[in-house]
Image (cartoon, rainbow, N blue to C red; front, top):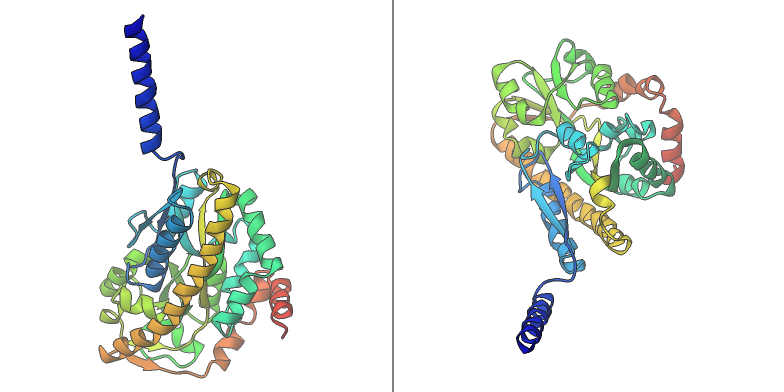
Length: 326
């Protein structure tokens, strides 16, 4: 009997010891992927987001960041997340418009003049309501839509000054209707391919041109395979941080609020880097021998004006103007 009591006492003591040494929670991990390099503003923003989330939740929410398409192209990561995999990504919002059509307005041509305007609209009640619809429609949760990657410019082998100069030019773009129709309206032949394939496609001549923001041009070394950058700024690339709803629902309500706030905060941090490093990146591209050209935007704005009606986004454009008070 004494032996049994001693054994039970030892078990209790060991259990108590283990309970003191082990955390009293099961940490939840969010896996976030990006097609961009670690030194890109989005990559730096995600790393800061990881640090901030883990500190603010005392390690109860962990974040793993995967750069350079380690988890696949953006579309592949979205598909994985929708299938229930623990995957999230930073994506142009237009890719999500197949689930909530109004979201395409964030990638509409010549709509936002500055990042501050995009940030203001991304945090408006009207926009956030569309974000709430996304979960039911797609199985994705939008944490923040203010991760700014910069103005998209035309990258070509020949100089361009008007839309007619793009006739017959196969230009890589994002495979969402608003992007495809914008590039088509600008005069080029839209050619959606994965971002990781753009360098080799330009090098081999399977595409003639691309469009990208300054930090991505430099980060992907596209200056090595193109001759001209025309500063069209046709779309302000405002992206969203999204995660799998299945993974999100494992996080407590308290910690969800923390993560959302930090997603917005770090979106602003990353966007500030985009603006700062974008100027440096474009200077580096020019120094590499690529011709950087300004252009009269009026013909391009006129050319894409019909895209809003074509994709039935006129009401959304009016809403943006209302929110921005213009």
